[in-house]
Image (cartoon, rainbow, N blue to C red):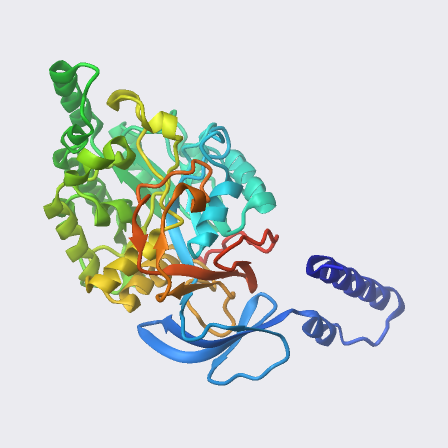
Length: 481
């Protein structure tokens, strides 16, 4: 009998005991019985990176949670010898597009969560621009139902804003989902919020975390008309950062920040792409006290406009990858804490779609499987420390979104972990890409590390070679003030 069957039988057994106790007043210590039934694992000889420190220790996992962090733990249970590898709290990706429902030819919650756990990402927040767009709580709950059945990582979803769903936003239960996503630039379906009266009401009346995609639509349309007149159907990929320009980004981001300051809203600005925008954010408060925060994405920290010649539409994102000077400005803001979170904006499309001419090639690309390795390459280069990497990818998303009992390696917290092997290089190829689209902007690159293990809620779901399809994931829970 396999492990899942054994665990299922144990659960049935104790369920029966509880029923007997209720009916017959049996004197059974059910808490002790359940304690015995919990699976126990020990992660030995880890270099735990957590809360600004690297500690050589063992980690005892009992059931779904961390029971003890200490040197030389001895206990009955399954032992995993990490042999000095880095052990990180599970990565929380605060911006992904997993394409389900409605766009499942690109990816599904199942397929993309497989890629996520292979990259050490144990929790994700997915965006509302699916088909249909998640503009009501009923549609949002349908996505939660899909994830409950198929996701291999813990999950939450943002509720989308539009020009005409304000009443839906106002009556939502904010304790049940991560935030409200506002596209202040073009998006899939009816999700562009360009009515200034609606924006004023959202920022002044909705007490939940507001999350923005900031690009000024009028500026983009004007620029697009210029390049269409110049190139017709043959607009080069290198024009993308000129069409979706610095001006378009700054106009929108500065407007969002001004609205948030005016109404004292909680605002999180996704995927900052210009150095100029970084000036809008401050580092004068600890994260838990900030009301206005920002995110940088892997592609804006890695690529520049010099890469369009080789990568073409495969690095076409919105907002666009811009200049090397913009990349440097974003890095500086990450390092001095004006930018709080590093995420992916994972957004798969098929190869066939990306091979279209500029106007019809969709923006976005798959990144969730390789985010940790990409950032560890920056650790190798001396750009940042591994402690800062963990702060921006694990701790800060949990703090910013007020996620309960995740993002840190603490006794009593859920046992979400990523094992980073810095002695094993990893070359990206179509054969080892787990995203359904089977391509990556990193194809052909060799990273200086690999992800050799991922634990979600106390269960190993990735061992560096294969995925274990286990139904152990949970809907993220959020603290309310």
